[in-house]
Each structure stands twice: as C-alpha cells, then as structure tokens.
Image (tube, rainbow, N blue to C red; front, side, top):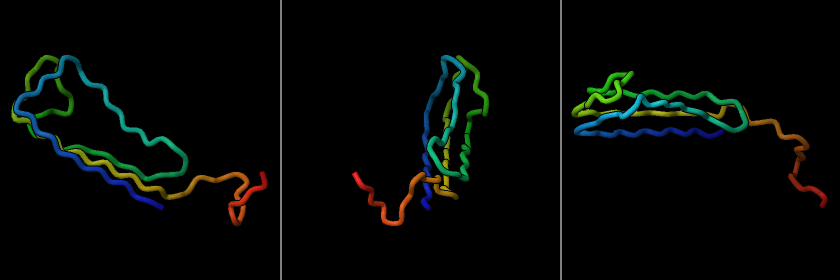
Length: 84
C-alpha cells in the first residue's frame, strides 16, 4: 500500500484570466483509493471573473491519495511464474 502527497505554493504579483478556468482532479487506475485535494487562496476568490486583474495572489494547493485496496488480478499464482 502506498501514499502520495503533493503540496505546492505559487505566488503572483498580478494575475488575469482571459476566460473562466475549468479544473478537474482525477485519480485514474485500478484499486480503491481515499483521496482529497484542496487549496487555500489569498486575494483570489473561488470563482474568478474573466478579465479582472487580481494582485498579490498566493495559492497553496494540497493533494493526497492512498490506495486502500489493491486491484484484483486474474490468474494470480503463488510464485508469479507462468509457462510460455
């Protein structure tokens, strides 16, 4: 079982969006996971307005995922050796 945790902080003196951003967080692959992601924003609203300039912006982002159950593997043998 493995854990992945990612943290990032970015800062901008000036920031402007030409259009409203579309964002998504996905955790593709097999297995069952517990996952979370969130951001803490300073001088940047949760919903931004296209064309508006934001100043002295900081965004701290955290993403974490943990595999809680391995995927089922068909034909899994005790030693992993197969005839070929």
